[in-house]
Image (cartoon, rainbow, N blue to C red; front, top):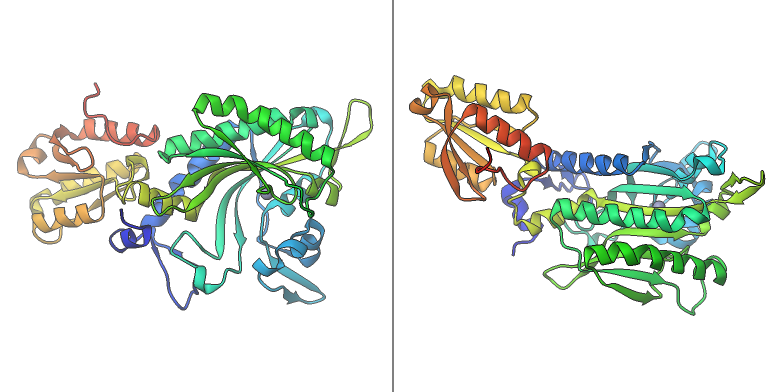
Length: 411
Ligand SMILES: [Zn+2]
């Protein structure tokens, strides 16, 4: 099992530069291709789930984070404020306060709830340089983040919806979830909200999780003391090969932000009621999920995620035009293809394998004459001659359906 940093030596997904700073990786073109697919997955799932998109800034006034409570609770993990004229601004440690302000920007009635806001938002952690590592511990986290604002009677259904979508994302990605955890408060101090609120929220979460987790065949483990300070949550947990345990997706109830930002809605009685806020993570942070995918697949990503889906190799100069034409047609269909015509064929094949290109398509004189290619599907150890038309069709299907590989037996 290679670590994602070792795999990156061949794959060139990200780079670090002392001039850019530790924990601030640069996404190279092949890494950006993977991230683009993940962002598209995150948006597809969010939209199918009734979320709407918002964009909010990465900087906010110091007062915003005083109001949210982050400066009181997380100041040690935040970058120091930047003076800006009369004001001070800070890089945000979380997207939630901005989403609370988006909710507060309009009046809401009970009829229009739930409102689900989604953003792939950047947030910042002033991690010490000693703990930084590849993509798994970074100072800028790009998170697929959703905040749901709903009525109390909608909370359980919203939690179930969030959990179901998070499990769906992990299934599409082929990442394993080991168990779910109901993270509750314990008897210590420092939890915000009343005992009745906590009991209600924990019961709602347990009820919501029960059905979804039974469908998925996952156990729910009780974890007193693991709650967020502002409310209980359900976490999807994974253990990696090195014995570390991580939370990869989460559904959290929040009693804190709605109070602090005075978030409400007009009920059927014409009176104002406090809204319930739920934080949801689905695909997770781009950095963490790319590291997890590289390790899970040891660099050989499923077809739809592969940075280079097809490497097109002409045997000789006479096939150059054919090879270019094939790559152009693949790209026009939305696939990622490269043409490599420099040097001996054997060396080019080795290079394509080193880069973990999903398919290697060789165009020789016979294939060119027959509008065909000699294809090696490296992951499936499949090799054969197919027509260009069939290759285009199979590649398009595997990509659009987010399948592991091409279905050579189809049709
Ligand atoms: Zn949040």
